[in-house]
Image 1 (cartoon, helix red, strand yellow):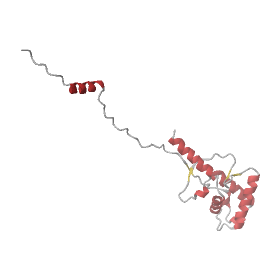
Image 2 (image 1 turned 180 degrees about the vertical axis):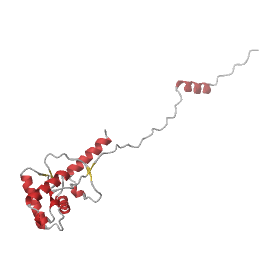
Image 3 (image 1 turned 90 degrees about the vertical axis):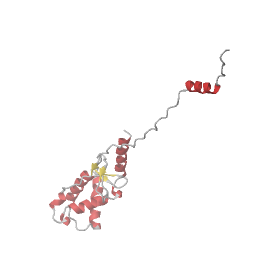
Image 4 (image 1 turned 120 degrees about the horizontal axis):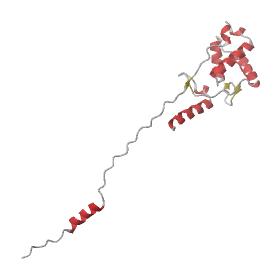
Length: 168
């Protein structure tokens, strides 16, 4: 007698053919997202005017207008752009002014106006004084500094520096 022929198992062959026709899918590792690495941003320190002609006088009331004008120019050329409030505070400190009276403020404001009209100083729309053509830099100030005493041009420059470092 001839050996018996078993019917083919079509299910098994179909599975085997399908496995051979399509390679098995490998599980991919999830992509690792690295936290952003920000470059260290270099911001210049705020430089204070430490020497001006006011130091030569023991009493502020004896300071002649030309000397006060020179002192204003010295402060603004080092610290500018500066607000009027910062300028008052710096003159008070450097000139050892016991009290910044309205008369002293008016004298400073009048001298500033003369310097702006003579094109030796510039004043922006916010009221910040600077020497002409001074490059705006982002500066790090002491902790107790009012944001009202930071010009928008400097804030904009700081944003440029920070964003430039992040997207470089």
